[in-house]
Amino acid sequence: MKDCGPVTRDLIARLTSPTRNRYYYGKLLDAYHLELEQDYGNSKRWLLNRLSLGAGVLCGLGVRISTDKKRVRVLSGVAIDFWGREIIVPQDSQPFDPAQPTDDCGRPSGDSIRQGVVTLYLCYHECEAEPAPAMVDECGESACENGLVRERYRLRVSAGTPRPPGVITEEQCKRIDEEPPQGVTRRTVVCQTLGGPCAVPDESCVPIATIELRDGIIGSIDTCTFRPNVYSNTVLLDLILCLAERVDDCCGPVTATKAIAVRSGDNQAGPAGQPLPKPLIARVTLAGAAVPNEAVTFEVVAGSGAIGASTSSLGATFTTNTDGNGDATLPVWQLGPTAGSGQQVKASITSGPSVVFNAKAEDIPVADPPVVRVIWPPNGAQLGPNASPQGQQWFRRFIESPELQLTFDRQMRTSHLQAPEKWLRLFALLARDRVAEANASIVAIPIALGYAGPTNTPILGVSGVTERFRAEVPRELFRQITRFLVQIDAQGGTITEANPPGLLLDAEFAGTKLVLAQLEKLWPITAPTPSDLATFNALTDGGATLPESGDGVPGGRFHSWFEVLP
Image (tube, helix red, strand yellow):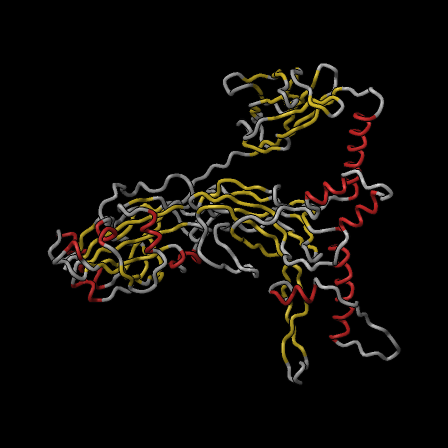
């Protein structure tokens, strides 16, 4: 693999003398020489990209948060990595969990990060494809070889923030800006300040966003502070012209007039008929300096929206004065009722100049995620030979064929049901010494589950789609007081409905008094593990009842319990 690991840096990023084919009549073009032909062009292009164009995002590559605020997806776009290689994301990525750190090769590495800031990197990735039979390999034997190399991408998540973008330090910038010594040109100052060796980058991946996590929930996404961008010559020319206008305003004849420009809030998107998340801010300047107390009028010019200081005072126009920074703020822009239509608000000053803010109205998503209607054994049930008549009947059924029955309100995806370990787990908690209860030795035992298919005759008879899961319960657990905990952790597409739009299971149900920390401590165990009395005692009624489960938001935790009495 040419894109992962420390050896790659020396092979790609260091300076080497280029080598290309020299052709002559009868020259044998074998695999080595044909690869040499490709590598020569690639390495030259990557070298020029790295040393002349620079690394960063060329276009696109936005980062969008999912509705459950636990996953993100990277939008399509193009970037150049720090080794000069082009990275193309042709379409939006699949949603993924940014709380799970990964190593340099994009594989999960370490525990999930629930609190703090992580950085999302875009990395170059090659993979081989299109296998075909090779008549003879290097050892003289028949084999299969891949005939294509696909240039793809991978995403890496690391804790903390990267170095800020930019190659010129503040000290270097200050030295260049100072008046040069007598007899020294500014060109010489720049050469002496910025001259240096051709350093090999120690990082290839491009940071495209920093993500703030708060208790496992995405708080904010920043795609500007640490993201390097590469601007085209057209954009750079426009920036030079803007700078020239500023120079004319401050240093030329006193002919400057007031100007108004977008400060923030342009090109937002939001549900049709609803206010946008950010206010609109326009800045008024004169010869580059802020103009305070200037009246600015905002006016809806497209999209039938409404504007104002608050949602209770909306209209077609809104006038306010600029502050000390020259900024005029429109607090509320409520979009028009038609999704997909162009929405525009114009901001203007009395001397004539104006600027237009654009927005996009989107359809309001209606979420109706699947839920669990009932579980057997039911939450809080007591099974045993001395339990209630129903508990005795269930006890006989359970010891003869230990299983769980989950009744969903709709059909769930079969491939997810067949991999229950990703979202459904069963644990047995028992006290080895119930005589001295305060000092009881508690042990938690994971119980393996396997998918056993649907049933048309569910034990509890509640309407819906009932699925069965075999439980490999050791027989000795039926001869002592054992409390069983059932956990469902719906996240990252592990358990979704079978039909479009494929929403994640809404698993919110607190059938026990266990807190999140106790649930997460039990979830990953794979062998009998010491537990504590507080966890054992928390396996009591948590107040929730079925079939009422879920909170209308995909994802969440489901936990219920039942007890087997000897």
